[in-house]
Length: 499
Image (cartoon, rainbow, N blue to C red; front, side):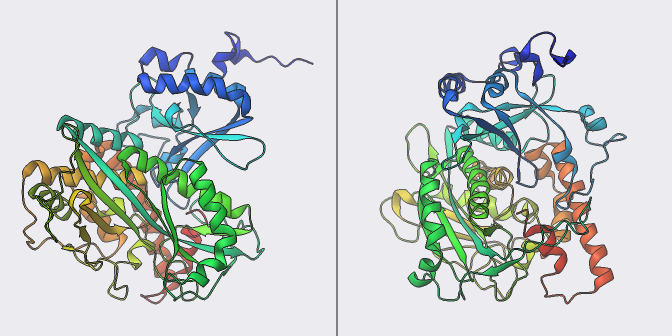
């Protein structure tokens, strides 16, 4: 019996997205249009496509469609629920969608759909997966074709446009620490799970004892997973530089070569998502949680390397004159001054979880505890690596699970504020870094630059999401009374599995 589908009576193209949505609102540039043509020719070699975007927490949310449906998605976009904008990290409803959510976005009432438009330049065939599966990132739009005010990828695009007005291109290098553990076959974690209550974290065991930094033998103990993982990342076109063993048991560090800012954020989202899935298929668990509740585990960080290139001269504007050691240009010092002056109020974007602030304490000697900078000093928040044309800065504050678009955008925003003001980094006394998510949220809430960077709707949304998260933690802590220096069961349930 044939089933009638009245929603597609005007043709199959009406079944997803909005007919000719991309063309109607002129949402692609020439490079994207050319990439879409190439994809059309490749789709016969693909079975499924995962259409994804980055939610406010930095997690990839997706729908999987057959390749023939994706042909329509390319021109129409695809409808997505607003749910990922409304839930906090524990899936509690943090933004009221039944009445006015207070964000100034009418389409959120009733959790109405938005339209996700694929960016054809991000289309990737995922190696080693059957059925043959591709991945593509999209940009979020309201139904009238305007960029969605809660789209974090659009925040970074806007910041990059500010640089372009000054004939500048920001360049980003990624250095990420994360944990590889072995799944031990425990329950799936659904017991007690629900809206605002995460079930038990994955049951795992350490893969080695750790605490022999860069020991070749420790790397070899994980090489059965790490070596094919590096090959997979290279096939995806990511500019992998190194995979190395850090201090903790099974703690790895992955570094990538310099990329333009938006490419770096896209790469980070793809990297984290594919690492977790690659490891899970092999009976392992990868986590980008800062400090898991596991014996002898060390904290993990995300070190963000940054420089700025002049598009007129192709010169690194941070490079000092000549080959001076421990030196950088006045423009570079001004950029650093911007990073330091906004460090406290924008810290929430680099360290967005309760658990992330465990790392910013004196017991972790290589983690930043104050707002400062220094040449070649890993104890400083901003480490300057001076090397002629390769001179750049490394901000060591971030946690590995943060939203890559918001982290990079906040750094570039702060740096550009300093760069355009021309203020040298003369080491004045800057406000201290927050010591908790609650303290970071309070500083963020009062920040004018946060609203300038994100727009009022996204700043308000993030405030609601983080208020919900930290309030749930505070309630649990008041009931359970854990030791102040203890990584809690709440944190492990909340972050270890999903991040």
